[in-house]
Image (cartoon, rainbow, N blue to C red; front, side, top):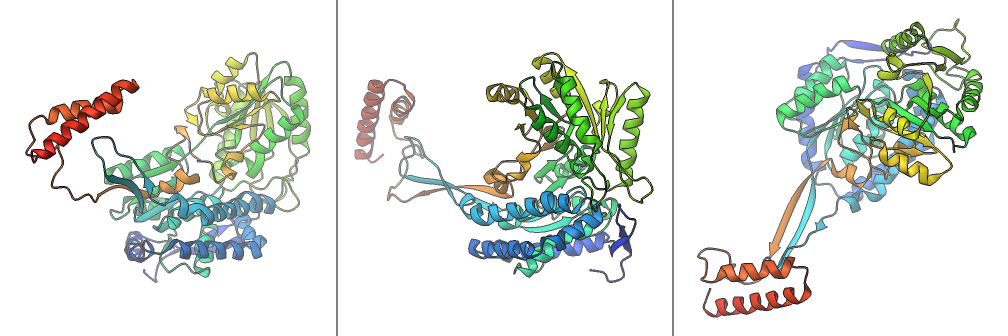
Length: 520
């Protein structure tokens, strides 16, 4: 890697203070990293699961010994509160590490298959083999957990990893590499690529020796990454944007609904892909719910220290939220509540804002917001609410609040999303045994769970045959009468009538015996 690379600086969005500087890795630097990853893959892919498990357990212990140390790095780069960093980044990541340390070997053991009546004596199974060099592009909103989840999945499956964190949250991305190497992971199994997406990230996704891409970010950029993967015919998992809806029915516990919806929409300053962006409330309880949620929102204090809600992270995203708010107000929306904020302090603090009287034509209803704006909308029938929830190009997650669990399950079955929470918000991501991913424009593929770690492998099917036979009956030269055996075997295997099955099986067996006697 070059030693004379230019550097870029990172500034705390809450204070404006410099938090670190990193190399801008160019195309040649990325190429060097890919070559090292290819070498690392050759030995890491052959490592025993006991080794991988030991490293993960030690990494967990390292982070758990001083979680505030790592949360402070995350908070300084994102502007989020320490509590948000500890809960959503540190805890969530550690739970994922623990889950795969315990279950990865079991999930990746060979799986037994079965063969049909025409293929007796076979042992059939399939195995999971690591893909190779995996490129992972992580976002800035949850920079540790959304980097470590795919990194751990890939590494536990035997791959080497090139992690490209957001240039705003590079230090948060470096944590997982440093900790795992401190825990015993060999050098170059994980490498962190530092630099802007347009240069460093582009060099990664365009590199010809990458075997898989994993991208978390906006739908627009995700489409571009997917195109580059398609050009190379390599798999790509896309975890993209959302416009998640919470439905509050007339049967809801309104106190829980108000607290849950507010947290789901405002946590991390609303910068959560599975965060609530629209609240649909049964008209018969609308006024009561609105009073409860506005009461809560008015008392939310912003501030990275001593506040419930931290700073937003990116100036560009702050501008989008400002634009959506102004667009809504210009078109007749009203501010029902606004959180407390000290506008004299530096930082990208945006007050949590509850909106009423919004319409579908407003950007806040039709575009991903990714900020602390929460429109509350009344509905008259559940079918209307379901249609409104599904009337979006996104399909990541959602929430339903009702004390009638039968009602909740019926609504959940009709919402077109990758995940849904009944009387909860956001929780599906925090349960590592559940697959996570979206439908429609919210993503392609899944991670987390047994299926998720298998997504970082190639599946190879294997058969074994150990009977001492000269040939199969269907191999050339075909014996006379073999079609009768095949016909009777098909009937015996697929017929629903037990007597027909027995008769056909006996007929096939007798025919095979005669053919073998003839030397067929």
